[in-house]
Structure formats: structure tokens, C-alpha cells
Image 1: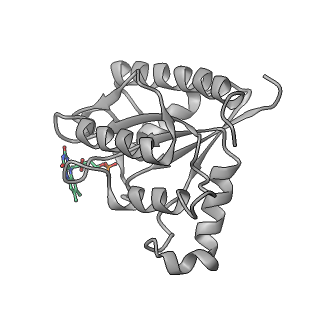
Image 2: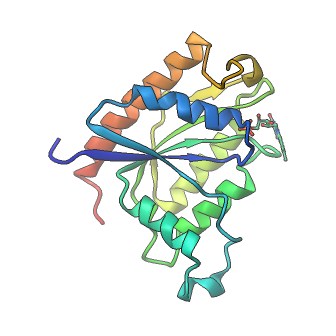
Length: 189
Ligand SMILES: Cc1cc2nc3c(=O)[nH]c(=O)nc-3n(C[C@H](O)[C@H](O)[C@H](O)COP(=O)(O)O)c2cc1C
């Protein structure tokens, strides 16, 4: 690798005790030392409004800069009403515009999710994969990381205590690092 790869994490939940945020934090230790990993915040951006595109709010400009400088993205997403949460969709809207200047364009993507129910965010993940087609992001097909019954998988301090889930996240991170380094050389910007 010529330059240090940078992968950013995006959490689709703003909840303080978010299980998805905890999963994103748990992923940190699986990145190799030559890959920079940073969680990017999305909760302070206003609702997407095309009128604001000519004079971007500071929070949006900051978000866009961080995405622009990233080589890959790791999404940790809850499922809201069988789909992607509004705050995550809002971030994607901001990152997908203006036409021809989408900072999300061409990014390699890893997807994981934690739910309190049995479905492990699967339905929402498939909606995100559909969105990736339009935005031209390149999600890894496998491994799919859908962690059900998330309330049993972390301790009181928020650390991941379930070895099976940790193994899934580790395999996703490993695959995303390889995927990102491969695509970094082929995506035409
Ligand atoms: C508005 C809302 C809608 C939800 N819809 C679903 C759903 O459709 N399917 C599901 O499995 N869980 C659903 N849930 C439960 C969340 O997936 C669960 O609370 C999850 O832990 C949220 O992620 P977080 O812990 O990162 O905040 C919903 C929760 C909220 C707040």
C-alpha cells in the first residue's frame, strides 16, 4: 500500500446507548495499524434541502470533507420501520449531491447492524444496498453482519462480549480493508 488507507465509520443511530455505535467502537481494534479509522458524526446536519446546496451549512461541509478524504466507509445501522433510519438517509442525501460532486461516489462500503429483535437489521441493510446502486457506492456482498438480540451482546461499559459477533465484525473489517485497498486503485473519480 502506497499511502495509509482511511476508513470512516458512520452510525445510523443517534441514541446515547446505541448498540450500533457500540459495534462500531468494537470494530476499531480489528483495523490494522496502517489503516486509519475514524467515526464521523451525522447528527448535527439539518434536513437535506436543495436550497442549501449553494451555501452549505458548516456541519454538512465538515461531513463532506471527511467523506471525501476517506477511502472506504463502514456503516453500522439500526433498522427503523423495516428501512434505513432517517438520520442515515439524510447523511446519504448530503453526501450524494450536488449532481456530479457526490462525495460518496465510488466508495467501497462495509455494512453491519445490530437490532434488539431477531432480524439483525437485515431488511434495512437490503435497502441500503439498493441505495448504493444509485449513489454508486460499492458494498461488500459478504460477510453480512446482522447481529440480533443486541442487548445481550455488550456489557455495562458497552464492550462487545459476544465472541460470535466479534468474529463476524472482525471478518467484515478484514474484508473491507482488502476491498478498499483494491478499489482505491480502480475507481475513476
Ligand atoms: C423508530 C424505530 C423504528 C424501529 N423499527 C424497527 C424495525 O422495523 N425492525 C426492527 O427489527 N427493529 C426496529 N426498531 C428497533 C431498533 O432496531 C432497535 O431499537 C435498535 O437497537 C436500534 O439501534 P441502536 O441501539 O443503535 O439505537 C425500531 C426502533 C425505532 C426507534
